[in-house]
Length: 69
Image (cartoon, rainbow, N blue to C red; front, side, top):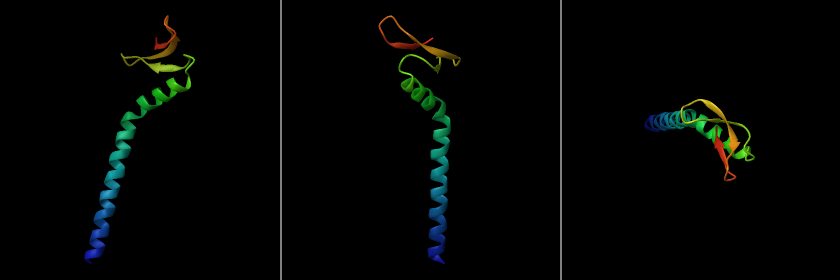
């Protein structure tokens, strides 16, 4: 019986850990997606999220870089 209780406890701990990792990923997903999109569209094309939360597009800057405008 002790072994069964230990296995149930480890299962619960594992499920909680998976839920916590999933919640963190869900919270961070928009930032991750924007970063991947920005890297993928290195020619300054594509959508991005501005600091005020609105959606903009990457445009070329005077110094040759890209900025969300």
